[in-house]
Image (cartoon, rainbow, N blue to C red; front, side, top):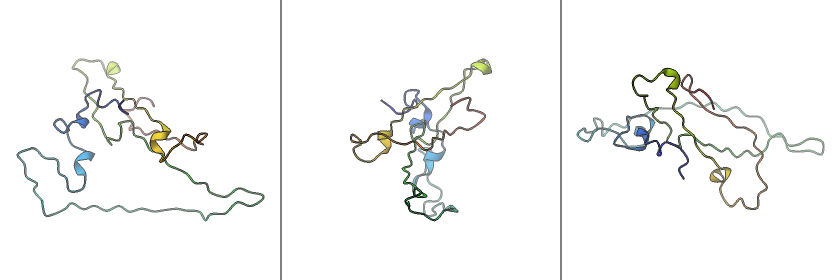
Length: 142
């Protein structure tokens, strides 16, 4: 089954014919234009830069009286929109009262999808953090 409702809901993000533009039009050396348009800058790649700042603490190994200061942490990520990175919220039919104009998207996530290798001999995981992501005010609940 799909990992997100987007395909089932025929969301425009899932079809290049209906896609309205956004994050997916900006992959390396790809341009999303109408069929009759030419890329206006074929020899001028668009550039942008990121600046990162990293904070860290020195590692202290375990001793007889205290555990190690750090643990290995496997980060798992799952996006409700099935890794599309975005999706369109359909407009309600004209005349729909605002309190009835609600769009729902759900998704399924299994730990085994995020772990490399066979997990059949594993007893489970220790979940240290789970952080939902939502853009207010359009998000009513998680």
